[in-house]
Length: 112
Image 1 (cartoon, rainbow, N blue to C red):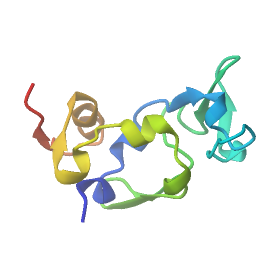
Image 2: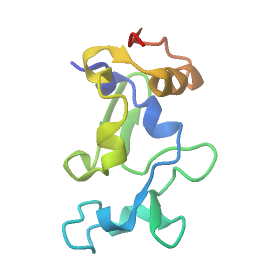
Image 3: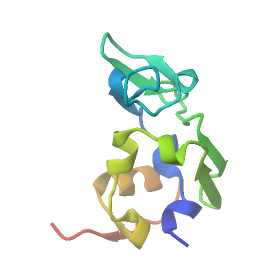
Image 4: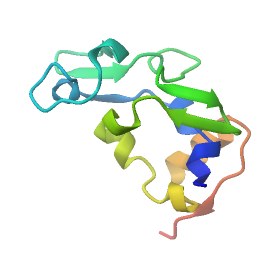
């Protein structure tokens, strides 16, 4: 099992912002419109991530125990690109910060 499936800290730590063209009302967009809110003219974010405490509406489960993404196949590029090696146990600084915010130990750091 991927460490990401027991973590979820990134989904409850940062604002998840991305371009409007990733929303399903745009040609080729995938992210469900009902799960986003506007941030600017050409930018949206996942609902729940612009507030404090932050928690993406698509996050299911308990952080640090067992989590999943309700729209995993349709998640925005920013989520797809976040901490690309975390799934194999190698975390970057953003991953480590998210885990720290939720009282979780950092993953093996990626060598600089």
